[in-house]
Length: 364
Image 1: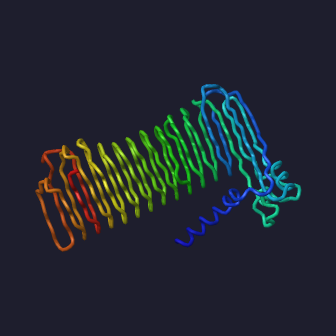
Image 2: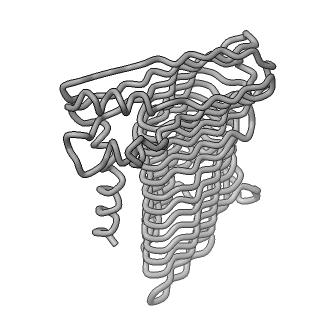
Image 3: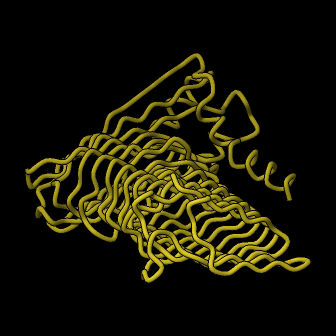
């Protein structure tokens, strides 16, 4: 499995290396500019590869698109020919603007442009960059796919649907609900704020600094979500971190889960990993953990009041000295501890079921 994964990475990176390699003896470029008058609530669609897409928003009922195409290589005729064959297909109406990079047209010799770039004749091979600069209404919606490059967006009030593989996201504010971000093999991505939405990411790394509600699905990914009201995640072979959160529901196997402050509820189900909750807040309501082969460390605020019920199999239990234990049972394989902190008649509860993973519950 590991060898297959490494091979898949290599195969996916080959075209990226070809595009991003040395520039060659000859470099040619051209610009394509289009401006469209639209409704401020229009849809803007962009489809591109091998370049960056930079999007800024404004209050004008206008979509402006500037595309810079640059081709370089060691054969001047080939560079000029390939530059001519790269084009952008535009479609526009008052409610929709679409721009799609066309790099698949047939050359006069019957070879596709892809083969021209990545064929067997090294003297004919070239490198290309296709960069977009887009200005669009802040209230418009966005649907963009950009691979092997960065997607940069400052602020958007309309819904965003963003796909980016082998690149990076640099996103400011997504102020609409139900946004969707999809990216694979994309590291060091940053989203300042997303009101709500879903993030699907594999083999990637990202930070989301603020959100009302987000769902994260992905594997082999490092996800850091700083300030969140509602987080629901399902992620294997990953690291999931949060800062301050109101409610979190999560599952993940072979994953590291590091949570900051939990203000209300947390529910986790994980195997073969680790769980660290820095603090259950003073007014938290519920903390539920079910796990196997997972170390569990939970800290609670000194002003909190709660009941606890911990059941382990082939695992240790370490409790703070300030906890009152009302029930303690041990046998050959199982340990059970129940009790309370500060108030026995309290609706807040910590419930933990763990097999082959030690449990620590301490006051912060």
